[in-house]
Length: 399
Image 1 (spheres, rainbow, N blue to C red):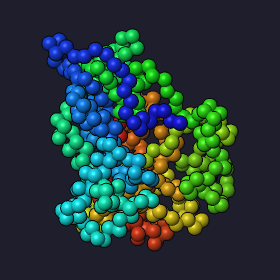
Image 2 (cartoon, one colour; image 1 turned 180 degrees about the vertical axis):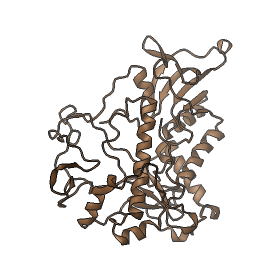
Image 3 (tube, rainbow, N blue to C red; image 1 turned 90 degrees about the vertical axis):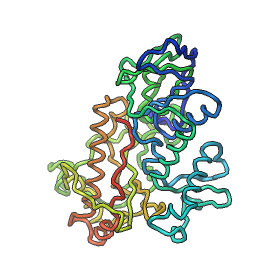
């Protein structure tokens, strides 16, 4: 399990309340201090306000909502009856938005198709909608904040070096790089990185534990376990710059390190990618541009996969409203920039920015390669050039 990813908010400290007459300039105080701008952060803030508490959200991000507003609109719902509370209220607001003619700017609702991930996208009976455009999700989160009069300090970054003051194992205050100090009764780390918890001394693990650590089956290294077509199958692909010649060196993106022993732990973490919102509408598209530092040799492995007959490029271009897609990693070579993020969890903000930029360049370069390189089959090039960006990649992950 990757403990560095926090998928739900976690209250990590209680202390005494605010004494308002002792508050200084750049000092802020509330019952609840939330660090993060994710969907968990927003929902935590709304719930606390409804309980009559004062709240301050400290968001490193400019956009609120995390993955939900950053491109992941193709929701994994499963049994929808178990989704309740404020989470269900979010999907009800999504339904309300799309239940108006104005919401369908680029497509008629009747032409949408109503296909979700295992369930219908629109459930009129329960007044919920489970598939949505990124900007619509962000609008719902912003409306949650404004309608509950919640204070949000955006682009504020935890000072990880001297950020947390503790007393008897409890957080007293935290500080951001801008010099602001926040005091509260309860602190929540609602980031994906878990920086506040780490700074407060909460234990964590980076990488994969072995199967034996928690008596699990799919926790450690998975040699020979082929899931979701994220593998080469029976394709015989040479990993060398000159096919079949080890002395020529390895292609970009291929590691010379051994994968390790099956079921054992290691330092590797799940690969990162941007979820892309693309469109087939010619009136709402931007051509794929060549990114700075573009190097087609970085995608030579993909060219060889095409040469071996693979054609499933568009399997995870999942439809969302208005002729757009939630595009995710899939197949043996895709948007995941594998192996390029292993130092991200504990990296400095500067190094994290470098990693994010490298991922952005890789993914933009991938799309440019597929759309333009003569090594890509012509039918795929023609199809991909009809699906350029709606607004490009939406950056909504921490520095």
